[in-house]
Length: 518
Image 1 (cartoon, rainbow, N blue to C red):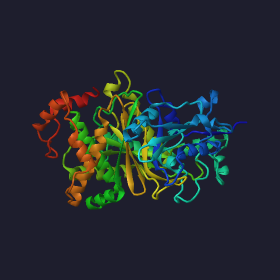
Image 2: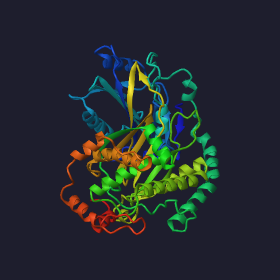
Image 3: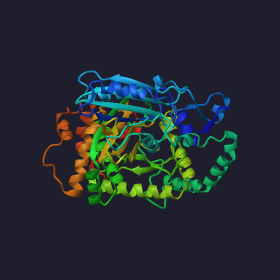
Image 4: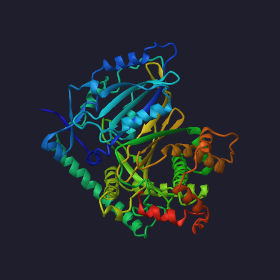
């Protein structure tokens, strides 16, 4: 009899949300330096070695079960024979193999939905990157892993002299029992599932009451963002199937220093940098709303050590303060809003927090419906996720991993995702957007660097002694043409915001923001 592992409600939602235009997978892009003295055919030899290891490790040998039971209670079935040639792929970049060529390839790969009849993962080895480098793009369906769990799947070593051993899909010593953990029958699991959900009801009900009070304007905590206050923007539209991917890298020490100067956490600084970049980006397009953007910020929950797959994530809503140009005011609002959201989730059990997050995200689906969608405000404007990654340098067959970029997913009503991943003293920002809905996204990556410089100048008193790369690129940009330029001109004479004293977007832009997409 085929052994099956049931999916949680959260994992099942990721499957239900899957469409041709909204593939629900996440990925990592790793860049490696070929070791000194390596063979000219190093990457080909590496591919041959990877290909020699059959698939045997969880969750790479999981496939969605089919038939009536698979529809009623989605579950994974464990396969013994998997076509590795389908999942492991070898590509080469066109000359000159720069960052642009790599970004174009990854954008295309990330736009392709996964075959739900097979194990939901792909591993792409990409050679031909300039300066004697190569890359790995590995994607997995979000129903299979969350951001934190996907990092744990990476099987690299911290010593370049050590052998790499088996790739991530090959079963290792000690994994055999883990690969079989949680394989109780679906019927046997029902009593435990019902009991778990029943125990979560009281704390989830209290969370819903608090959220309802916030939406009604009678919350006990004014800093708690409500489900009905996110403005409708160009980020909250029905999306197409093609993606754009962009990246930016910053030093962890630099971000932490800003946090100490500002009296906040690293995550507060990340959110503030995103806020500054988004404010300038939308302002350039003439699409900056008068109200602050709301970010959905995922929070990793405790999971059992034996869980080889699945999600354990809740989300809190954070005001980004994009309605003010004052950096200190913006940072303070982010800090207070984030603290209020964490306190709110902290009163719920893990199961209740996950169920609460699913309920709060329901309006995202309604925003895409004809007629009704125009009346339903988005619960948030975008997702900003911060995932802790490896602290030490990692190696693959002696090749040093120079960079590790997260590549997440977007969906209807949420056309932009910013995910941040730490690795060996660096913070890598991964921007993923709908190619058709979010124009000129590369500018957002440039503005991220400038927003970090602005925070550094504000809280550490450091004036830029030389132009950074992002600043040089920004100077070379052309001004927005036509309609966007006219709106920018009108905004210069816009009235001041009564609350903050800062100048706000002019009326024409504000009206358009409230109407929604272009």
